Image (tube, rainbow, N blue to C red; front, top):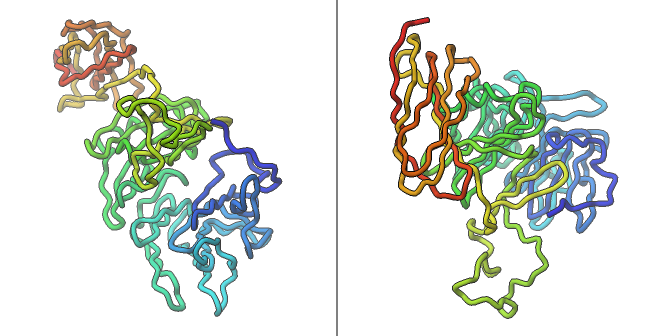
Length: 419
């Protein structure tokens, strides 16, 4: 489908998608682009400035929590306040907040979170609190009422978020791409899910100029988090790590220069989905009936490019190139050189054709040097491949529609010297 076009001069100053942030409060979209005055959706084709927001000021990130809007990193004629956070008066049900100026008659307010370096990047709710991220620190806001309204405390003094979109909610926890790792947080404790698996690979691939375009999104229907990022030399996200929450495993997939990948219920067709208008038999019916609005199974991830959107998880028959790999293996001795000469593939029958390549590195931070791909066709189980280095890698891919499953790869290697 195509993006909705609006004849509106608001939010016209910035064209870079990474500068935009948005949220829903009482079902109303709120949008900021970091330079213009924040706006809200005022009906089909219309945007309007937030009521009582100072017209000469802007914020780099905006989000909703409880019945308030929170604006982070404020700029205006008085200067730029990278650690300043403001929250609005609580909104009445079905409306947006109509006051931002704190007074004795409302519960709007502000706070300066300046006891750690860096700017306020983003904020995302977690259960009954709002977690606020800097590059190297994390704060927690909880509603307490009274004169203070919200209580703020620092919960991590050395760990924050890498970008404004490198955080997503996963079943009441946050998955966070930090400056150097991928972690899961319950609001108090953090545990690495990327260490010794994919974190070095991610940050070795990540473009050092366009890394702010990295994003995280949780696809609830598939129980997967997609971490989209631009590889070296790319502006937008052309690669992704896919984290399966249930299996605690990572995969890799190619992307077509994405800007973002939100999740929601999508139906942009004009075809009627009522009972009376459906003509196929029950056994042949596909898709979700319109009676329920709560099932996450109806949610679909949408890949957003700079000029168009594509719905994922559709019923169209599409052949997907699949990859399986293990990288930078030192086999318990990172100083010794190893020579790989053969790979035994433990694959389920009828796997079709697979393509296998081997790689090597002399140092952990070196780029992997790959061999040419070797082809293996069912029922073959052995392929001769050669690679030599202190660290060895292997990668398997498919290019057809055959369903394949590998239960193991046995590598024949010889230990060599130290140089």
